[in-house]
Amino acid sequence: MERYHYVVRKVGMTDERAPHSLRYAYATEHLERQKAAGVSRREAAAGVSTWLGHGDGRGTWVERVYGREVLAVAEVRHA
Image 1 (cartoon, rainbow, N blue to C red):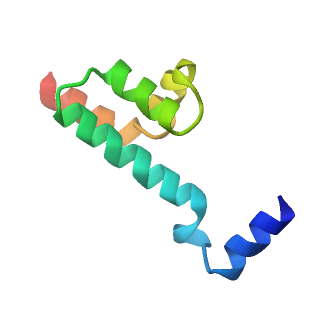
Image 2: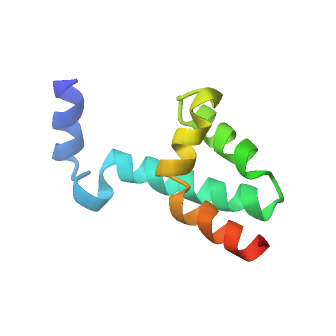
């Protein structure tokens, strides 16, 4: 793990370019696409959770962390 962190820093993947930022960007963009396609909030979160390697059982967690803004905006639009 130390080697991984060393390489990540060495290539400049820090701050807003950190690996977690890439995961966050992917997750939020994918949630937006799923909602635009009419996929339910629950299904979208479960799918993103699985693609991130968390498994579909962490869909609620994905909603809270990655979908906080994306899914909240979608709820307001559909209300």
